[in-house]
Amino acid sequence: MSQRPQSFESHAMMVTGYHKVAFPLLMVVLVWTVVAMVRDFSVDGLMAFLAVVALLFVGFYARVFALGVQDRVIRLEERLRMERILPEELRTRIMEITTDQLIGLRFAPDDELPALVQRVLGGSLKNRKEIKAAIKNWNADNQRI
Image (cartoon, rainbow, N blue to C red; front, side, top):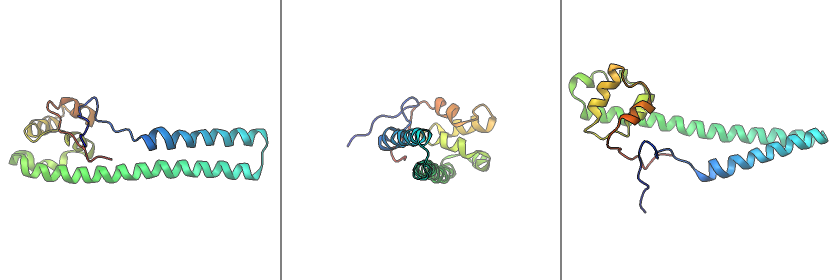
């Protein structure tokens, strides 16, 4: 199975079942329960509304927690990669790079990494969007969630 080529413009991942099916369906049910409660309030209607709100919270936090774990793994992977690739003067400063910056740097190929890290540490690249835009030869991440 071939992977779709990635670049700065096309690397964001949209999960159809989550973003385009489950979330919109929950929003439809939420609106329906609110309308039903306004038209004819009942305890059953209130319980249905609370159940939908609870499901929205569960869905939201399931995504946030998964992304948080992914960010921690990326941070570890990038620090290990930098230990292997960077020259000594940059290697001693790896801990100064924020998680947000490390997430941007993950798309940089090994040959571009030292120069990008130098720019990050120098302050000319501050966040993941700026870093990703500065990458010349995109290194695809086909394992992301």
